[in-house]
Image (cartoon, rainbow over all chains, first blue to last red; front, side, top):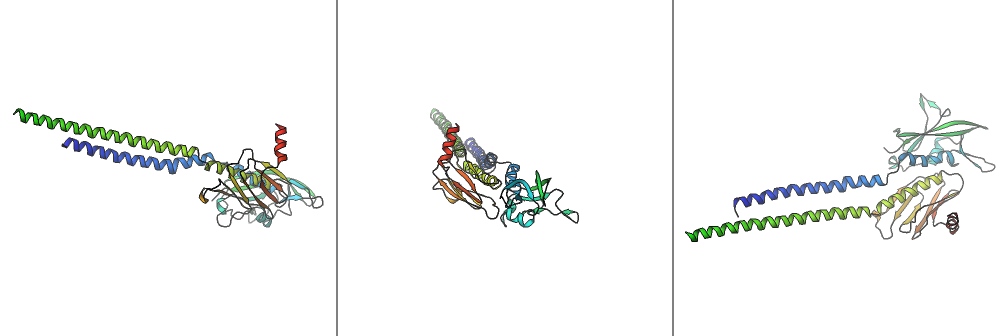
Length: 163
Length: 158
């Protein structure tokens, strides 16, 4: 084997070394970056839709804040019973896991004109892992049952997707 | 002299033949490596495209959203999943929905969590059935095979 051949072989070895490295990097990128991203995009659901579906309970479910006629048992969907609009009720209505719940949807509720303020801050009803990181806000037109009156207002739902 | 010349020509021919042999060998090796890499990438893409994981994630997310919708619906209600689901097994409990294919390991099971208001219960399993229904009966959410009446009503609508 002459010098030229040895040089040729060495050159090839360097070429294959670099090529193998590039192939490994490309395969790693494909497996750990591109495919998971593609997969996530296939199964992605808009967070607004999820939040909207979860927050249906705040205005339609008597176990949350919805007014239910005690005599007939009729549920008045879209009517908030002011008596029920308390933090205690919120805790019973929607609760995320104590430890990992910050990764889930959390909410802060404000009933316009009815939510009291303390030192200039509104006293919102919050779910157990709400940390004031508002990602977006939903608005729902509702009626409030205040005594015997039904008054129109807006339920403002601040949504925290995950921390 | 002629003999010497002849020997050196023979050596040169051997050398060039050696070089040709090595080059051909390298070329064959290169082609094999390229074919193997291409095959691996194609098999990976095929595996990915025929993967059931994506379907299971979609099913679990859909059922989770169906549960949230039923919780937010006053009175009693029923939802039928619009696709056949006989390939999959479902386990609904108060707080989670698990979707998997029979015989799969724990790691391949897809689990989604949800929150129910206090007093609510969710339960039910389904295996080897085409139709999946979720029913809300007072404070219970039940996952079960759709009743024959629902399927018949659907057929008559068509």
